[in-house]
Amino acid sequence: MTTSSRALVPERFRVLAYALAVVLVVLVIGAPSAQAAPVTCGADLSGSHVDEGCIHPMPGTPGDHAESGGGGGEGGGASGPRYRYRYVVACTGNDLNEPNATLCEEATTQCAAPRLLYWQYRSQDGTTWQYQGTRCLTRQEAQDGEALPGLTLEDFRRLPIPAQEVLLEPGNGYALVGVPLNVVAGTAPALLQTQLLGAAVSVRATPVAWHWDFGDGTALGPLADPGAAYPALGTTHTYERGGTLTVTLTTTYAGEYSVDGGAFAPVPGTADVVSVPVPLDVLTGGGALVQDPTG
Image 1 (cartoon, rainbow, N blue to C red):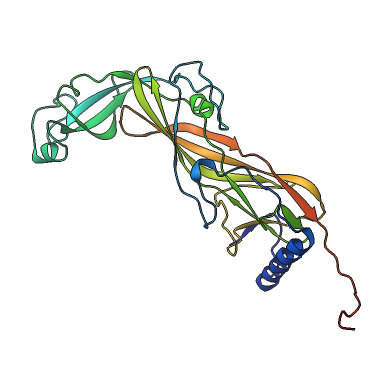
Image 2: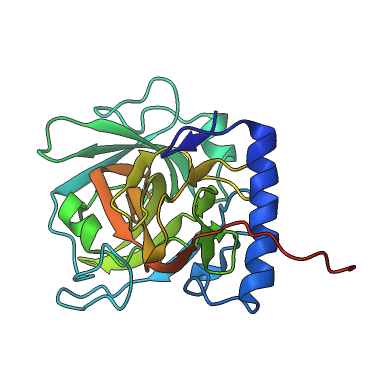
């Protein structure tokens, strides 16, 4: 089902109107105008969806400022809770009380020597432990888990999360009154790396929703569908009046973080990142009778 800010016209008339609009705008306007900022992190919106990830090194010292992105104030150290980690050799019969009671084939063959496969547990208070997945560690590395930083929602929102690219169709900076404008959002996830309290922290930011402001007082979203390029026409908007305006995309990101290669844990909440507004001229079309050019 197509998502639209307005009731859809029958398919065959919509496609016909769209094609005529493209021809009319090209003939009347001529050279296309710039419509959007350069593609973020090499993402490409020529296909139906964008899923190419980006890697962004981050400063690891509190007080450093991010240079780009919409979550972006400071890119410094996390202020969240500190966790302690404990490791249990991944064999039946072992537990937090007896982490090395037995050794089994699975623990010795799943990792390159001299490392063994361990179950990882995390605790904030030192009494309640939660399973976090598995890690390959030497026995020395698994002796004592260190207290490591956590990541709060405020920390996540301060990171330089990249804005998503915007595609408008027709792609020449113009739209016609009464003809649906197709809008497509980028979907590229981001991986950010930093050092916090001496620990390596990886943060994954994944787009989960998109909100459109069409500049005429109407909006669409938040949507779970980023839209798709023509002829899919997944998300559209039809202008009722002409004018010069801007279209603005806001992308909602969910976050996960990993400390020192441990299992990824979710960030409690989301971050909104606003893309650069895209200028758009909405034209009013009309019909006229002309003399037969053949005489």
